[in-house]
Structures are given as C-alpha cells and as structure tokens.
Length: 68
Image (cartoon, rainbow, N blue to C red; front, top):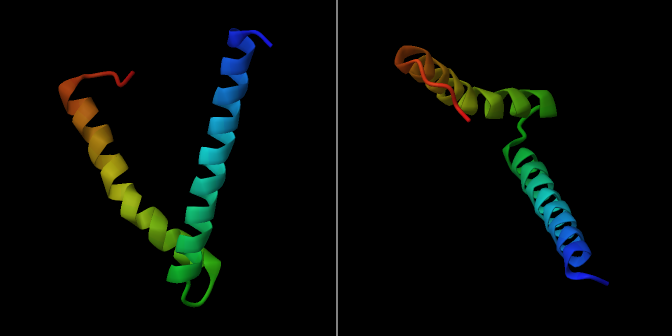
C-alpha cells in the first residue's frame, strides 16, 4: 500500500472517529439536559448559539468582511 493511499485512509478514519465522538457528546448532553422532551432541549441548546451567530453576522456586515 503506497503512502498516499494510507494517508487518505488515515484521514477518513480520523474524521469518522471524531464525528462519532462528537455525536456521542451531543447525545449525552441532550440526555443530561433533558427535562420534558427532546425538542425542548434542542431549542434550549440552539438558543445558546443563536446570539453568537447573530453577533458574528452583524460584525461581518459592519466591517464589510467576508469569512473564508
């Protein structure tokens, strides 16, 4: 097996493992924070990120910058 192909396989496996761990963390967080229903927990988690995303959007609009 050549090095280039090994690098591609290594990157693919790393991405899969990182995504699996991230999904496990999200599921664990939803389970810990769940009160009445999963939908309420999802809305609560989304409300934490909404202000940050809106703030970044307004900052880039004000500074006339384009994120890369």
